[in-house]
Amino acid sequence: MLRLIYTLLMHLAIPAILVRLWWRGRTEAGYRQFIDERFGGMDEGGGRGGNGTPGIWIHAVSVGEVRAAVPLIAGLRAAHPGSRAVLTCMTPTGRRTARDLFTRDVSVCYLPYDLPWALGRFIARWQPMMLVVMETELWPNLLAACQARKVPAFLANARLSEKSRRGYAKFAPIRALAADAFAAFNAVMAQSPADADRLQSLGAQNVVVTGNVKFDLVIEPAMLLLGAAWRAPIAAVQRPILLLASTREHEEMALVDAFRRAYLDKSARGAAASMRPLLVVVPRHPSRFNDVDARIRSTGLTVARRSSLASASTGEGPPEDVDVWLGDSMGEMQAYYAMCDIAIIGGSFQPLGGQNLIEAAALGKPIIMGPSTFNFAAAVRLAQAADAMISVTDAEGAMHASLTLLGDHARLRSMAANARAFTAAHGGATEKTLVMIREAIAKTKL
Image 1 (spheres, rainbow, N blue to C red):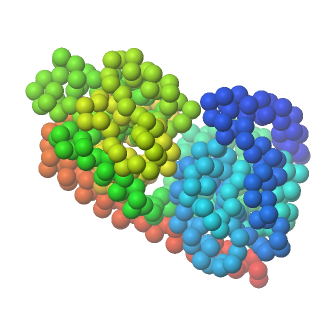
Image 2 (cartoon, rainbow, N blue to C red; image 1 turned 90 degrees about the vertical axis):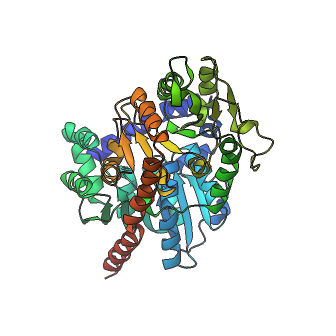
Image 3 (cartoon, rainbow, N blue to C red; image 1 turned 60 degrees about the horizontal axis):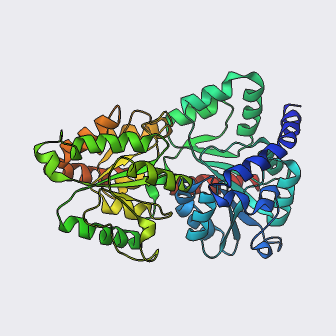
């Protein structure tokens, strides 16, 4: 009965959903494209489905989950040679990233909305042998559709913050709906014991702690070369590079103002004034690039943009004398990390839970994060214990910490080495996840 009411509400929400897509499409055109995919159709590459061969279905909501899924997809395809694979996303940036990463052999489209007929249309086309959901996407009708069609479903790299757990548990109907959905997974592979406990408290079964597959990320040599090329002209004039990575609204200006006070204003003295770092700012959402650019310029700082380079493939770096370089590109985060001396991770200076720090650590970058890190609590705790990361309370603290680090070359090198060791020590989650999936599928065939 609860799922029936939920389904009715989902149908009633369709007009509002379409308006929201159109509204968001004002700043991100991708929201107005491939609408049929969101209702189980196939706007692009429709010929890839429906040929009678069971396929592998992976769902990764956005960019971070898509990148985390890369080694897992490779392992699943190796275990099932000849099988088709389809990767579904929810956001335009996730879909675009997936298209860039999987140019062949893996089809990419939006996940249909949680409507039984849309999901039925999709499943009939792709005939999946399994569904692997990355992290914690919970759609009751999706899981019910898989159960009805005997498609094993798995929750991989699962995480659930205490805040989210309380949200699910707050109202009895929501808790009951969530419990049924969590119980529908054939196996749940949790990132940490704390995640496992919270997931089990909401009804998840067959929960095993496998670790975080983001530690198994693939470092792209082309991105390392690009980052080195960008860094070269700045290093030649002996300027350090500070990176503001995946920043969110209200964070950039707090950090930029703190940067100006620490390094550029008349109040900055001695070593700070002589350093004059290049500040590289990479906002998380492309729709905000122009706004962030205008806001930074309004402070009087000089700004250059990645997009102003002659071509997307050029190795040309930022001008030597610019104050801020705006990283307004997609799919180049590893290059931005490769070019910097210190990575200040966004999403942590607003109550948003922080963004992924593992990629920066894998590239040997000392990390600074603000106080809000609940999305990556386990990784943050491990990084702090390894002395790969510094936690601060606000933007001023972040810039003070960066100033201290840049003035202590021995500590900077030590933290860089610790960051690499930290990521290397916690790898292996992908293989554990693949083993769990293989064992669970074998049981369904008995």
